[in-house]
Image (cartoon, rainbow, N blue to C red):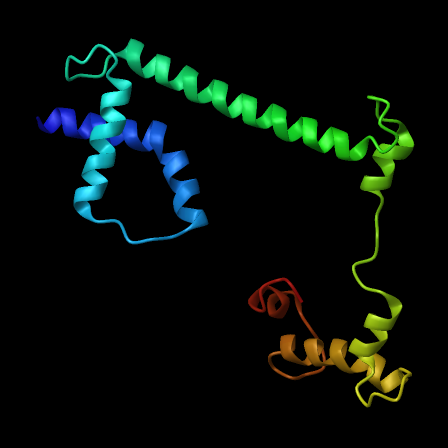
Length: 162
């Protein structure tokens, strides 16, 4: 009985875990122990195709193949949808222009957004003092001993992201 439960738990996480995790991620809800055990029993029963109360290598292999086929079908559907979106002239082929239109590097902010972020006094222009303010603040924060020099050790202590 203990062995059956351990195998059922392993099978549930190996085979049913993905679907359960995706479902719970969409709508997280409390799960009772009884409901969890019922899900384990259902998963075990679905994998135990010969209904002998044990999971064989063949049954586990068959379940794995079934789940792999489902994941591959899902991936193909997503790729097909992505392809259709990229194929703007709907000729069934991707030209370099269609592909590069999606892959083009684009700024994350407009110049107006950048100006708004730098313009501390909101006068519609950025002075040299406003331009230097934020970077100097970060420099001063990393310069732990406030000697006016940022050493590699200070950068490392600050997390290396400064």
